[in-house]
Image (cartoon, helix red, strand yellow):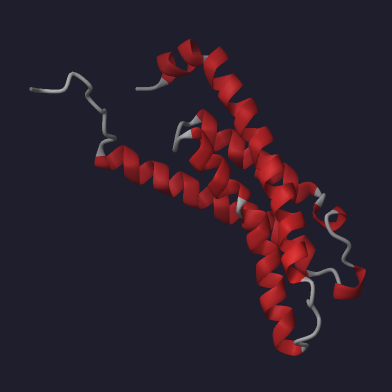
Amino acid sequence: MQSTLQIERPTPRRQDANSKLLFAACIISFLAVGIPYWIIPYNQVSLPGTLMGPGILVVIGAAFFVRVKDAIDFWMGMSFVGSVVPGVVMARVIVDCFSDPTAHNLWPFEIVYASFVGFGSSLFGSVVGHIFKVLFRQTLNSRTP
């Protein structure tokens, strides 16, 4: 007995383009959030307020763009882009602990704060991108070759 459910698999070319888009969105977001955060001295860092800068707008925009381009499904796209902010904080924890092992003795809380900021902003961008995609589906499909 054959199943009537057929799963449409992405073509290798489309899958490769989507993975490149997702990789670029994550790298750009990582640098946009990370560079301003890393140049602040550790004694002046106050999470989550320090993360609330222009880099978060890049995370929102990346999640929006990944969702509009339909590079990956909703939850995976939100998770990939949202994990950038905790990754930025974890990179700082690792680097700072090489110079002073007692610097980040509460690092799990830093990761939790960064997760709320990252996943919250990514969720917002993904929701807005999904709404945009649904509302303008006809326009987006007519321009695609």
